[in-house]
Amino acid sequence: MIIALMGGAATAGVYTEKSKWDLSKDKVLYTVGYSHLDTQWRWDYQKTINDYIKATLYDNIAMLEKYPEYTFNFTGAVRYEMMKEYYPEKYEEMKKYIDQGRWFVSGSSFEEGDALAPSVESLIRQILLGNEYFRKEFGKMSSDYILPDCFGFMAHTPSVWAHCGLLGFSTQKLTWKSAVGIPFNIGLWQGPDGQSLICAFDPGNYNGGMEKDADRDKRWTKRINENGEKYGICADYHYQGIGDMGGAQKENKIQAYVEGSKKADGNYNLMLASSDQFYKDITPQQREKLPTYKGDLLLIEHSAGSITSQAYMKRWNRKNEQLADSAERAAVAANLLGGIVYPSEKFDAAWKRVLASQFHDILPGTSLPRCYEYSWNDEIIALNLFAASLTDSVGAVAQTLDTKVDGKAIIVYNPLAIDRQDIVQAELEYPLESPKYIEVIGPDGKIKPSQIISNKNNKIKILFCADVPSVGFAVYNVRAIDSRPNYETGLSVSGNMLENNFYKVVINPAGDIESIYDKQANKELLASPARLAFMNGKPKEWSAWNMDWADQSKPPVGYVDGPAEIKITEEGPVRVCIKVTRKAKKSTFKQFIRLASGDAGKIVEVD
Image 1: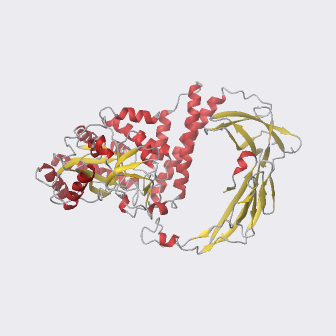
Image 2: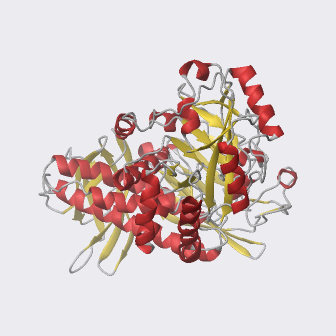
């Protein structure tokens, strides 16, 4: 539904308007005037709002007033929200230039987000909420994605963006040690399903630009001529602007481009363009002649190293993505059953906080510590909004279920699109005295394996095996009994060994998992113990996050070894657990190695 909305809305005169150029014969350099703003990096939101957003508005409006030919591109609906909130008068003045087609809302996205860690749903939401803001505020939308400064791109990305109705994509980051080099200057990046985007993979540094004779540059003349000969497209795509603090490009460069755009006797026509005009002007026939690349576009250093940095951001981002999905499915069910109205505004508010925190320096982990205080706060706000919606929706659905039981009713919700058997953990409170033993009855009237893992202060924490249909709800009855129940589930734990119907797991004295024996396949799965290794890292630059292959290719400098403290912490028919505690290099490592019964026992969990 989201994709259909984007594709349908996008075709109504927004994505398809073409310029006057015939690229089969007119030589054109599409120059994209752009201001790159790192919303948080070596500065935080406060600095961005007080200085950089302000400068972007005031300085570019001054240049637009002074030079009638000047055009400007700016991305990220969240930054426009900041403009509207903190500089409302200048924001209204900016709208005049958007209406004139001189200030372009670009890139389609809510924020210039990371493209490695976020889910596909997040990539779609960036476009949905970004272009929706542009449409509502300005009556405009963008048909491209622009990520000049992102640390890598996954192979499925062009398929996602193409299905959202976008035509093109540009980045200059592949010049930063791309693992596959730069596949082409202009061409098609094809996703796994065959969908593709027209891409500009080497548009030049966004902080660059020419200071004179912008219509006669030798490099761009050569590239335009080559494109004409190879593809029948006598054109190329060029960033010219400033970064990373927003603002406007230096005036001498603006003058060079404005003057170059007026000339008719240069080596090429210099077009001061929107970031997506290039893609609109290429005909289907010309598109077919472009070279094609299919696969990941990762960086040798940045994309590897940043994945290890600021783990809390990555954890909370993923928790929010999962919680959003669960909450939205439950809200649809509650809405259909007439329990509550689907909370669109609450979901949008939560998603905006998540998407803003996916900014390409924040989520990868390359920003100052102070920046994360703001982003952690936003992640927690989003978690609370999604959780509140989930609670409300499940509560509304519960009103339609038969929850009359002779014990305590627990409603189990399965948000996955598959029928599922898994372990449920729940906490129950009793007014007088909590029971010593319990049994759990399923909706089919059968007793399910269960165990108590904590019993104090009239509260018990329990585990039980539940079966719940796809995107469904099931009511389980927990009742007190007089004696310990006996369940045969195939689970056992003793000393340093855990076992269920699928695996036998052995932990050695050093605390490493020495063996995982697959009973179904009659096969040992480990060639050697699974160890925690210390690697040496002294990157040549960006030491907070970079990882150099020269370091990673060397053998480990040490391991987390024993002697280990090995202790059984859970022993029951639903789940067994061994806790392993070790110390090394002034750190304490605690691992909880678990096996469960039923289908949940098909994995060995290490927490």
